[in-house]
Length: 272
Image 1 (tube, rainbow, N blue to C red):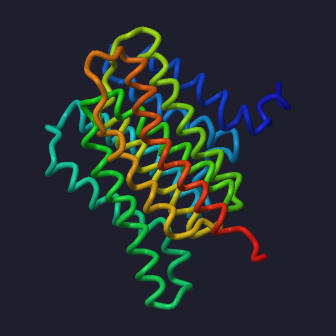
Image 2: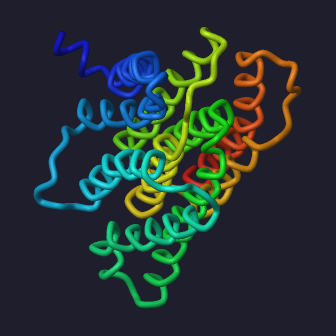
Image 3: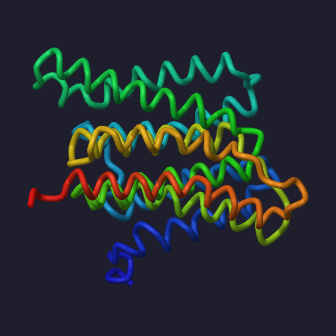
């Protein structure tokens, strides 16, 4: 069993997918099915590197915020009135926390470079939070965006020479896959809310930013991945069943992921 759990495909794919599917099935009617995404990447983090917060390195700060995001999402869904203003406030907070996450890296760079990298990473995370939270009331669109954001980030990170961040991202995608599959099989929508969208945006954004800082991810790849929440808003026929809508929306978003893969491959390829 131990060797089974140590296989990368299990750590980043199978186990997170099963966890996400179980959470969606058990908690969907309680409006907590969006926790499937957090369950996916939490299982991946636990299996790949273990959950620990001391010493508080950049990667452990990412894990801490990724695990805190679903709790904040639950509070927003059940105690606050969600809206554009709240999404912008939450996005600004997440952008600021991104600087905190990578401060140990930024302080060793020249001021101009630190401002550019730190500001860019903060803007990326803030944008993903604001844009993805607009999908909170549309669970199929939110699930498709989370699926492709995780997959696009994870595979790009692997191509950029970070298997650890890659498995984290794929774990996010696997959890979102479980969330989507339950809706596709049952034919019923389950609430996504900020519980899902904030979790996916914070985790996906920080995983991508970490690949930029700590691996070899080209700077323009996050720009492409930032468009995933917009692709999830593209029209689908209302008469389509949920399973068909989920597939079509995922295809829309996956086009951006493919572009990200190609750009990453070209950016990290050795010169001829």
